[in-house]
Length: 339
Image 1 (spheres, rainbow, N blue to C red):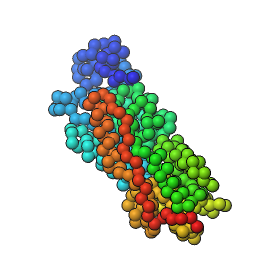
Image 2: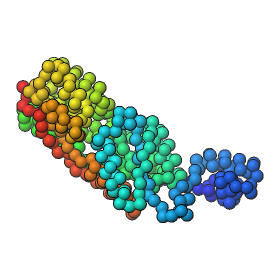
Image 3: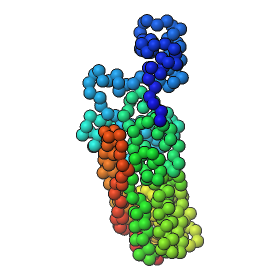
Image 4: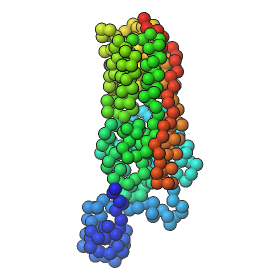
């Protein structure tokens, strides 16, 4: 576990007293320019930065700050209502105590790891929420070595040493496929997210398992980047192919809406020719015509559970992984018997 670099560490590296380091790094007189330069170099080599939390003690009681990184891609595409509800659920719990949520935009995994290191070394945050967790996520071990309290929004299989908060996506996927099978569908496709994204991996494995259990005639799970563009592209490929599926389950609402548009473009009726089911029962699912059948969950309550888990970790030094509900299938106008 990596400890925070202190003034004493810098002093030992530079071969001076802690007092000299304090004078030099705070720009005060009392040390020579050569010594000041040596101390600055030692601080740079060790990655030292001022502990903002410790400095704030003189100004009043410490306020816990929770860090959360958001990718540029998510912001460029627009944070959807589900993202915002998750953040709102976290803040609703933090607001009950002297706590705040610090959101930061990152360009990729490496910049996110560097951000966590800077946050933790400076004392800018007391803990963090890790989102978008992939299988064998490159952030897990470097962030764990920092010693920073972290809760992962992920299945425990993918959260490494961190406590996890997750919804039972496997059970929800199985429910959707079984429902379609009961309606009579024997050729079902799954338009999934990125192959290494933890949630997509859980859903794809559950889809394959229940399809095998039901001995479906044909089942395919196809990865995408979760965008409307790729959702439309994969749907088009499925629906113009031989033995096209009679039902499709999508990993989010955006792709399902794009799929609905592609079906109309190809002259196929929904649900008479093809049935569609979306993840994330957003307003978008309800305002389409016909309204989309969807797997519904409560992202606000999920965010609240994430915050409770992290506060427990901060208060006691430990927290158990926990499940936060199972998405429930809400049948609407896009599901029916196969043609």
